[in-house]
Length: 298
Length: 334
Image (tube, each protein chain N blue to C red):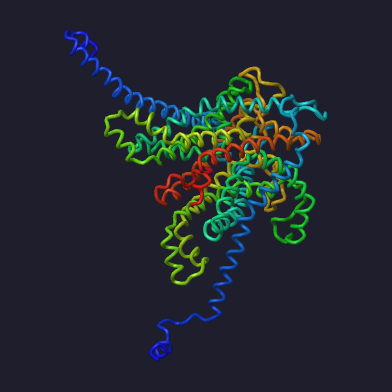
């Protein structure tokens, strides 16, 4: 009886009308639908573009394509061996510039993070990451290529190396900051000098993350086109001299894209597939190796 | 201290002194080296940054002196008569980037909302990964696809369709050329989308779960949670991410160069018309420029992109940085 009486009382707030509730449900459903479409868009684009490029370039994905020099324009043979070799050389040389400079700048930002100087440097590095890569190309072009009247492998790797510096700095700083402060304090309390704490305790504990950052940076510069075009140009020969032009995968693809021969266009697709495979494989592998797939889930 | 070690006679005191020298070498010298070694390297990096600005300014000094601010509005980019201006290039840059943001921002934020708020956790990781993969695809690949697939499609199907159904708008008038501002804008949408998704996702992930739960406990729908809690909380970060993506679009070179047509047209409202952007001018013409005003004009175009993206990036960083000192925000792709 008591319960029945209580139920008969009016609610302390106005009960929402059925229409209102209905509207809220519909809006929610609409939001689900629209955001799902938004989320499907990247998936569809990725699958379609990768599939298309593979389909177009498939006929060229054989051993000769990876080892031979480009054929004469319009001929059906030839490969992109020199471009693959050139890309490896350029990325290797760029790493010699980018890894030490970037890594130690990152270490500086963490070891001396409390200084105003570190704050200023961090800001500059942050801004440098967002500067379009063609600016670095223009920089080296005006500084090296124009005075020397010649495109060169050296200029190309220099521009790629400079692009690499801020990327690696940020990656190194981010992983180094994840090291618990207690680890550092415990080591210092034992009387271990700062440099040994860094080299023998901190760096080994985050080596996986630093390697990930370096590999991702290398994958990133391997796909750069505009700065390479302005500094290293293209070349139909295997590498022979640091002071002469050198081929690279992205620049060779660009060159073939503008070709009027279907064979070369198909080779551009095949080259693009090789480039994507390299870049994607690199990022998938390092993420898998360092458990990055789990960390992404928030 | 070495003298000290030599001067002492007894073996015991000698050993002690040697130990102190080793300790010094081990402790002080190493820390000294670490400190000044990293500072020297940081100074090298700063010198590169300063050298870059100096090279851009000194390289473009001829046109800066000759044209001044008129360089920004001049219509002609004419190496034959040595008259240079980047008016159409700035127009093309703004139109294509604006177009890209207009579409990439809602799609990207929507995708981020779905990934973070709606979809089951098993789907979340692959979806986020696919979006990040999209970001790793080099721009030349988008240029290749845009130039060989999208441009012919636009010319034969896309642009006639737009013209037929939306031809009353000033944006969709003119001849169908395939290449042009529309093509460049579309390629840019795909290229900057992953950046918007990644940063929006990261800032939405910072929103405390208690706030979501509080609203859900009051009986609100997921959408009301998103609209009243998630989006207001993450607004600055999302805006910062969109501005970062805008910076990316402003400087994008190869893909745009391949599909924009690279022909000077009088600025018109039509997206079908060809044009060029600041970076596509450089990429398209650097081969011919060897000296004088031509060279200087191209370097000044670079300087202008540098300054624009500098301002845009600083604005974006300030907005994103307001959301706690989350160093990782924006670091993923940017």
